[in-house]
Image (cartoon, rainbow, N blue to C red; front, side, top):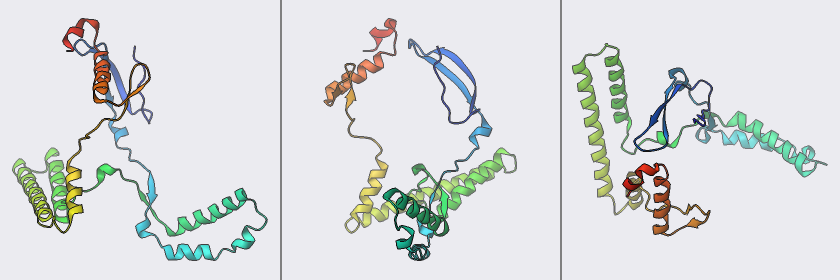
Length: 224
């Protein structure tokens, strides 16, 4: 029985089909198609851009308000609503907004303006080659030039970090930490009885029981 397929937009997926089980697992594989039109919808989440904010004007707008008269005879809740309204009005005038970006869009430290231009040229060359407007040889040369530029930029920044490690240890440690994405420890897990286990052997048993449960009884002899 197919339980649910959850999406955050109507019409995001289509052609949902069950494709049978994988090996001896009792879980069914689900195949579906992501609609291209839905994928092109961009997020409209915005956040405040404090770098372009005019805090001088923001301070002046709040100083012009006669707070003694505005909050006279008001309770705590009414005073808060009045203050909040004036604050939001000043914020709308003085602090612009920008589109919110995820952490995955953060540029690496070696991505300077010149390397970014090479990467854009490579994407444009690929788009032109797919549309038949750019020859294969030209596209290959552009890709190779972009790879060489990225390789040189990485080597240069690593050389500078290694040379200045005594004077700038924080940058070196931050660069190494960004390279290491593995977690050294697993948090506490909940076993079948509902208790939290913290020991490594107990965690291994919980994982073993969980992954073994997706196989049928015919394949239990192969899970070891």
